[in-house]
Every structure is written in structure tokens, then in C-alpha cells.
Image (cartoon, rainbow, N blue to C red; front, side, top):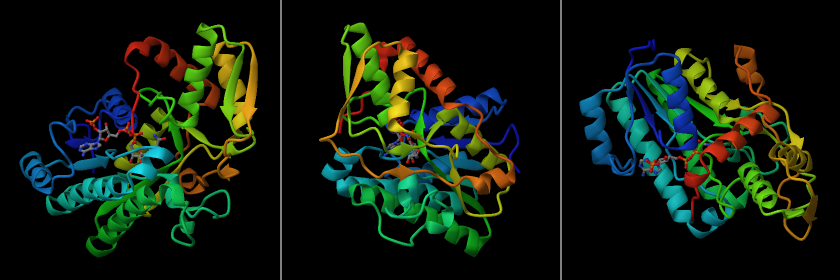
Length: 317
Ligand SMILES: NC(=O)c1ccc[n+]([C@@H]2O[C@H](COP(=O)([O-])OP(=O)(O)OC[C@H]3O[C@@H](n4cnc5c(N)ncnc54)[C@H](OP(=O)(O)O)[C@@H]3O)[C@@H](O)[C@H]2O)c1
């Protein structure tokens, strides 16, 4: 059982997801949190990770550390996306088994599911068809992490669980226009158009694809739910269970940012898959659902962006 004094190691605590988990754990009175930046502990290095676990002996581990990036980064660095992610997660998973961590939470992504899987995506669709080729390197690493945790549950009866978040957004997101996800990119584009008095904003595609977005603090609450409860299965989707068109997303963000003008859809640019929605009924059946409505989450994220505009994250590939 995890309690407020349990030693919880959050790997990747500087990232968008890791920082939200640390924030939420602190808010709830968890007082024995263990964190290391990548410069203090390179999780690709097996010896360093084992030494760290041997001396610190965490009771629980959340793996929110990963090499993360978009289509361009995946295209240009397939080996790093495959290998570094496997190294990071393998070292954390194996050290957690060896040094008797009671609870391990692995964070993956909805890209583990097949490209043409039926919508909404159910956990059981894993490995039923081929992956989306643009991020298969990353997806294969994540699938191997899910399988490693499943194997440990099966063979050793230990409480290792995988959570697959939908698209996340929130504080500490990446706002680089070339490497960021759609939601933070739109916040920045509309904001810059507003302050530069540009009446038109051009966005990629037709605006018709449907996507799901979860506020990262809700993801943190789902992670803590999984930390505090013994979940009966090894894999759970985390999302809102609701999707919207990219066009509605753009209009909502434009309204919140306060930009007045026209949105031009550049239909020469690709739309991507028409729909991507998670089936979140397994978590809902256990009693966990998200709290933050999309509009409220976008408003909080935009306020955070304004307050932190001087040092927002811009990840280069
Ligand atoms: N963002 C999303 O929309 C989304 C959606 C679904 C799933 N997820 C999953 O959530 C997890 C975290 O994502 P994120 O968006 O928070 O990513 P992020 O902001 O890029 O953070 C990743 C963190 O991983 C750490 N890291 C990377 N390489 C490392 C290494 N070699 N050694 C030690 N630490 C290392 C980094 O630490 P330093 O800062 O100290 O270098 C960084 O803070 C990932 O597994 C991702 O797949 C994210």
C-alpha cells in the first residue's frame, strides 16, 4: 500500500506530465518524493539506474521519462526513438523488479494502437494490426514497455501497470511551432496573430479530423489513482472519452485568446487520421473520470503561457 510517507520516484519530473504528477502529489500531502533530472541521472545508463535504486530504494515508481517528439523527429531519428525509449523504460522496469518496488506505473501513448483500429480505441485492440508508420519506432518501444509490465504481473504477481494517455495539454507544454502538438501550436499562433495585429491565421489541413484532448492535471490525477489503488488489469486508457473537430478546437482557442479574424485552412497539408478517440470505459468502471472541461483547460493553459512566455519550452528536433 502506498501512503503519504512512501518514497515515490517520479522519473521525468521536469517534463509536462512528470511535473503535473509531482505538483498533484505535493498538493495531496505526499512528502517523500524522489526526483532526478536527466543531467543528474541518465536513465539510458543501466549501471547508474541500478546504483540509484540500490541506494534510494523507492517504494513506488512512475515512469514519465521518455524521448518524446513529433512526426519530423520520429522520421529523422528512428533509432533514438526506438532505442532510447527502450533503454529508459527497461532500466526503470528491471531495476524496479530487482530492488522490490511495490508499485510501478508505466506511461505510454495512444499511438500503440493499430492505425486502422476501430474507434473508440479499446485496450484489447493492442497488436491486432499494423501501426501508423510515422511513429512506429516510438510505438514499438512503448508496446515493449506495456508487455514487460504485463509479463512481470504474470510471472511475479507484482503491481506493475500501464496507463495510455490520449493527447495531453497543459502547463509546461512544448510551444515550438515546428515540433509541438496541435493544441499548444494553435495557442501560440493565435496569440502571435493577436499581438501582431494579423487578421488571418493559416492552419494545416481541412479542420475536419476529430481528436480528443486531456488536461495534464487530469492525467496526474489518473496516475495517482493508479498509485493509490490496486488495478485489476495491466493496461488502461486515460482520456476524456469525448472528441471534437480540429475546426471547433481552433475556434475555441481563437475565442479564448481573443484573436479577431479569419481562419484559413491550408488543405494542401495532410489531415492525418480522420478520428482518434480512446475508449475510457475501463477506468470509468473503476470509478475514475476526468474533471477539467476542454474550454477551462485551454483557458488555464493560455494563462500559464502568458505568465511564462519568456521561458516557454521550445523543443528542437
Ligand atoms: N504530451 C503528450 O501529449 C503525451 C500524450 C500521451 C503520452 N505521453 C507520455 O507521457 C510521458 C511524458 O511525456 P511529456 O509530454 O511529459 O514529455 P516531456 O515534457 O518531453 O518530458 C520528458 C522527460 O523525460 C526526461 N528524460 C528524457 N530522456 C531522459 C534520460 N535519458 N534520462 C533521464 N530523463 C530523461 C526529461 O528529463 P529532463 O527534462 O531532466 O531532461 C523530460 O523532462 C511520455 O512517456 C509520453 O509518451 C505524453
